[in-house]
Length: 456
Image (cartoon, rainbow, N blue to C red; front, side, top):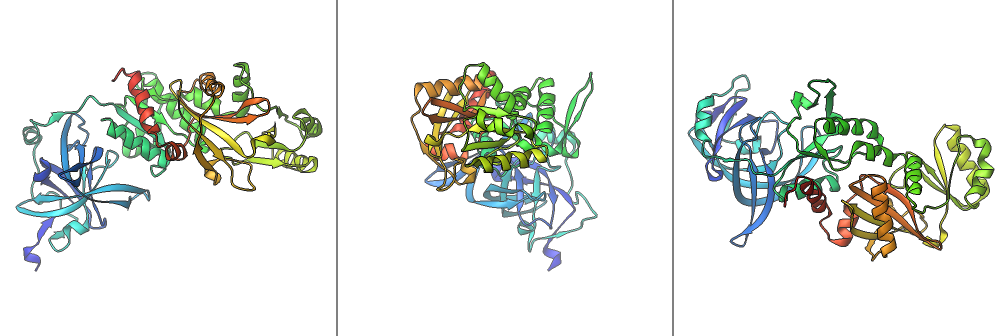
């Protein structure tokens, strides 16, 4: 039976006639179950009452000027686990593979492979029953020269006028990050997920650089969207500053993110802008605990870790004894805390206003679970549409401006004294607000970048 099979090396050149891809270098990997093709600007659509997907491909590694526009029938959308352990939803297409003199249909997933060494991965499902692999050999079926590649792709369209945008974050599977990637691709931009922990910098007066895993130099980006989790604020903001030094537009600046993560400093900035907040106390020594409690109107009160996020590190102390215990416990481990007035009449509800480029693009009311006072969606809170008052909208816009944030999630609470600002988030989540309002918030973020580049 082996004499009927195609013998391949660990790398081969192949083609996809139905996709108008004349040749592309593939990594032949029998250890991978699924085949994958590099694709950007992926967008599903309906053709002749059936599901199709269109996408662009830069078929030649490290060549962004050559682009092929492709369309193929959509077979499936499935979760694929990458070699680095990330799980990703991918579109699956079926098309004919031409390799040497052989031709047969295969299924492939579509994914951005810019960080990989090959535009194509040929997995064992596509090779089963047809191929033998000699891992010690390469290009057993030949390879094109540089001149022949130029000839093959001489009629390929040049890359579109879309921007090259990086999403600087930690988890590509997070709803917000995936939606931003999708929104950018739908609007014709080349989107790249940049894992913060896999970026590193060269600090040099003449040639500053940012490198990515494998030594790739990130030097062709127009804009980045920082989505920095609190635990890596320092390094994430350092990377953002490096991009800014390279004249890359950042949707939120490093300075704005840094000051927004300092709860005490951000509250001082907000107060200086005339924005009301719940009465708040801050002390460095547990010796002042009693006066600190009196300062905010007594119990019940809220104790907040300065470094907390998504409701974590926030405690409700209902009695003076409980407040003393919590405050002193935090102080005993040298944790910086705020003590804040508890707004009982809010009844476990707050308002999240999503501000982009000086406008409130969507608002929701978040309501805590029964028995819980924190309304964060991550803690089981529910979201519903709410019509904010002109005053609340004004506070949200003013707060984002005070923090110098182009994108901000502004949390407001309704009290007997009127609306009060709780917090300003520089990397607000999209899942709760998009799910409740059915608005394309991710698309609005991309539009804010386009506005900076005067793209209509």
